[in-house]
Length: 261
Ligand code: MN
Image (cartoon, rainbow, N blue to C red; front, side, top):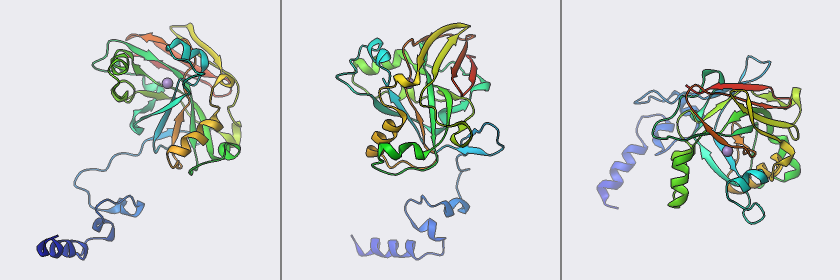
């Protein structure tokens, strides 16, 4: 490092700016009062059933091929390949009542009805026996997928991002707190399109239960409060068109209705 570089770095660090601004990157909540050159991103939050308070979303993790019959219909063998994770941006989550705008670029939009898990705490290497203690609430959601782009990505061994993590790709309903509703470990999960049932399974058929999913995910990431896990879809996936009405329900967690617009 040249002397002039040292001098300018010293001047930068000892400047009169707030401590948060001295760091190259700040992830400190106290920096929320800093002067920003653009408006900071909005907090994404979810409705909580029976409450005026809301659940702020940190990250959205998704499980792939977490039901045996869906793994088979996807051309996979769940005895050879275990489920896996991918991520959506937090603002992929939308209010299911606002409908789902048919996304750009794709010509094959797929529904996947899923159980949504919201974490109130986290950690690393979480013991499966303790994992459910980290769950704040459960809900119903859709993992919308640009199927044609996913198939192209699979063919070319490329990431799934543009097929799974696009804008508005996770319409969700309200969250149902464990405190009042208990844990959603078993129960029917179903999805219909224009009144015709397409998916009809049970949460107990998940390959990785919610507690196992949390434990395994926590080996790869430090989980934190606000993290969401979409726990995979059962068999019966298919395509929807503009004008279709998708309904997803889970025993004890109500139903959501999503208009494809
Ligand atoms: Mn999915």
